[in-house]
Amino acid sequence: MSVERVLPRPEAHDLMDLVRDLVGKEVAPRASADESAGRFPREVFTTLGRAGLLGLPYPEEHGGAAQPYEVYLQVIEELAAGWLAVGLGLSVHTLSCFPVAAYGSAAQRAELLPDMLGGELLGAYCLSEPHSGSDAAALTTRAVRGEDGYTVDGVKAWITHGGVADFYTLMARTSDDGARGISCFHVPAATPGLSSAAPEKKMGMRSSPTAQVRFDGARLAPEALLGAEGEGFRIAMAALDGGRLGIAACAVGVAQAALDAATAYAKERRQFGSRLVDFQGLSFLLADMATQLAAARALYLDAARARDAGRPYGTQAAMAKLFATDMCMKVTTDAVQVLGGYGYVEDFPVERYMREAKVLQIVEGTNQVQRLVIGRALAR
Amino acid sequence: MNIVVCVKQVPDTATERKLRSDDKTLDRDAADGVINELCEYAVEEALLLKEAHGGEVTVLTMGPDKASDTIRKALAMGADKAVHLVDDALHGSDALGTSHAMAQALKKIGFDLVILGSESTDARTGVLAAMLAERLGVPQLTFAKKVEVGKGTITVQRVTDYGYDKVEASLPAVVSVVEKINEPRYPSFKGIMAAKKKPVEKLGVADAGIDASQVGLANSWSEVVDFAAAPPRAAGTIVKDEGDGGAKAAEFLASKKFV
Image 1 (tube, rainbow over the protein chains, first blue to last red):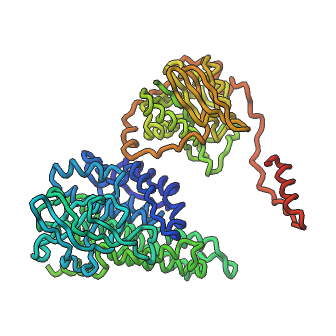
Image 2: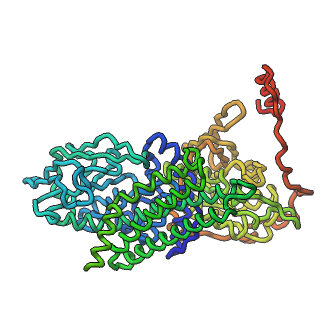
């Protein structure tokens, strides 16, 4: 992928060069084989961590790189174009660090963040439950406060990095007061009583484990609580605003990879004596793909700039997630069409892109939930 | 321990490389300049030795202004400072001239150990390490796949056709490394940022005490008389297997000295 990027600072170009180097040598070459084998590339995240990519949008004093979202998201996009499991994995890790970074006390930030952002640890985010997806406030996992901390019981579902993460950012119920009864916790993976089920057998992103995470009397110290009791739902929603931009960037990356593959094929493949790309029917298809893609990129970058400027951006984040992931589904489907029969087989990557695109319309809030968020903002 | 790593900017091997028609030297505008791959292994080895034994790693390169990109790459990996030999008078120097210039710079910098890649992907003479050692009057340990530093001594495994030789010498010394020696690290983003603040000293011919009559195209002992583009790849040889395919394949490989 060689997208011309306008970046806010010279250092961001150096960062992007580093990312492209890593994608070209360490990420993209193994994507196809690891996806087929369902092999989680933990060592790729270690490599990215040592390169300083696991804490990009967080402050330098805690080991982050103090990069604006505008830059961080374009890094995600480049990684996702090489391999969605890695781009999305980085987005989920960054999301998992958000509650400590934004709502943790000074002591919690100083103690936890350097390791979380330092590159050796990988995070997971536990909000959804088997019966609580879009209706996140209906979650039933309980954290009961005792004299020396909390005891957690319940099951979390659809957890990216479930079973391989080093820490879990957990939303659990501390009272029955609906959305106001939810609290946020930092849970190390080694906590007794925490276990994960076998990974789900997914349509795509098979290398990235998605699993249920169980809490059976898991004991948490009082310091595990992030923010105040009852503040968890607000923290979760704030984290998701950023996470949605991460998914939008992933969608743009996957779509770019699909467009690149389709365009390269259309330039090479000849039928009826002409290159496919010289048939207007296909050339217009590619033109529409490229245009929708560019619009999606502009939309997520616009939301990112609002965030970087300290302005409200939740509605724009929902729009970016909605538009970019629907675009990605359409573009990857069309890419398969451009390649014809070759698009439908694993010898070419576009069928994988199409399978990967589908999950992006579902995660971090289904696209119906995004419309709900946008519609509510209009009705206010 | 003060280690100097010699690095070189070369045209990207993934692009088309050309010589200039006027003076038959490398056309540096025709291809992107990148750090010579083996130089990355040399930098990595220097950093590993520094991490184990302390000291300082200085990068030395000779080349035009844009070779500073290569210096920055080595500094981003973790080297401490750099010296850039840059002077129009150095243009077109052959291996002998280059070794004189580099040796003078090395004397000026001072070193316990000099590390370099065993060859570059452009000229591929593979002689610079030996020439430097001779000019500096120190031991040469070339084609190293493993390096160990003791008290005032250095031991390497020197790759040979039959395996390796164990070679030991006193410090200071010059070592050239092969790609088996390590796995070069990626620079980190923090390393890239830090590299911008690290000192880079530019030296001209006079600054480094280089004898101008020993360097440059006109003073080179070797001369490129003529050159031609590589011929397009010829059609392959097709061997029909009539029960003796294995033997024919082996004969072919033997004729090309592959086996």
